[in-house]
Amino acid sequence: MNPYIPDALPLTGLDYQRLFPLVGRANATLARYDGLLQGIPNPAVLLSPLTTQEAVLSSKIEGTQATVDEVLQQEAGLLQEGEKFQDIQEIVNYRQALFSAQNYLKDYPIRLGLVRELHRILMNSVRGKDKTPGEFRKDQNWIGQYGCTLEEASFVPPNPFQLPDYLQAWECYVDSDDGDFLLQTAVIHAQFELLHPFKDGNGRIGRILIPLFLYQKRALSQPMFYLSEYLESHREEYYQRLKAISAEGDWNGWIAFFLQAITTQAEQNSARVKAIQALYEAMKLAIQEATHSQYTVHVLDAIFTKPIFRTSDLTAKLHKDFGIHEKTALGLLRQMKKNGILRELKSGSGRRPATLCFPRLINTAEGRNVL
Image (tube, rainbow, N blue to C red; front, top):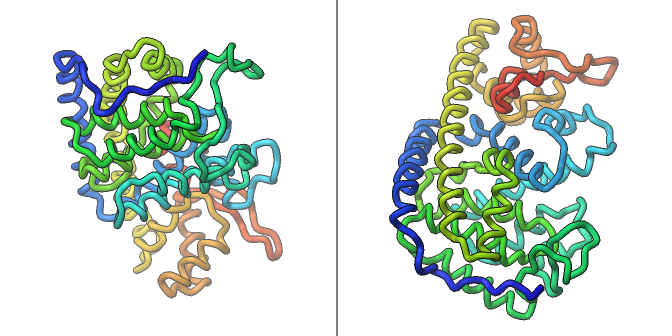
């Protein structure tokens, strides 16, 4: 099989009659979602669980098996290094890459240098760490069944000698205005996946780029729109639509699929953001009622950011950030546990602190009862 030769960007010959109704619906649902985002005073706190969930689901598409609560438990020191350690570390790296990109985009546009840096973070100390993290490939790679030869491959990305030129063209397209920004997002994601510029981790980097580009285009007020839930639940069609571009030049089918993904995911994300916001307001009242403390919001923000925690970690954070005395903080946690807001996952013993969790937040973020 010969290496794929990507189509020049911007694309020509798209079926706008078919795509524009889908564009209209996707734009409307995304705008409603962003309206919710703009109404949240502290999105980094409130949407922290959704960021972790995105990292879990995007990594799951590539075969990892860990869940949101397992990631949080490992970070709280509850899980020992075992068979899921690598999976969880990949998820933690993905989340770190998302945060790093958000900070970068406050001052700079998307560049190939950012893409390489995100890949370096993603591949740090996990499977694929030996596959030149942070560097575009200099060898021919291919996709197919495990152990297949180049001739048996189902897809062969562009050859490495032409890859730098294709990547430069992709970067120029990211910088351009090509009609509707959602159509352009669909093309940017697919073209990146087809270029397959890294030896490993291409799918996750490509999915990180979706909210980053929407934020750069000011379609989002925060780079927090995560598509992996839809793509993971439609994984087979996701791959088939990408493959149909290289096999048949079917950009229209891919873009239609992508716009439907945006529409459905924006509706689901909106519902989840509303549920998390409602939980935040309800817990503000519940904690105030349980503790009668002036520190209600500080404690609430802390458990939203880290809903599984060692008591010593949380009390140290509250003291460092807000000057709350350790005994005061422990008293607040005791009252919250007594009133069913927090639950003990592991009791303290001697110098070992207890590990507590905030189950309602984790269950809301996951969309199911896991704790």
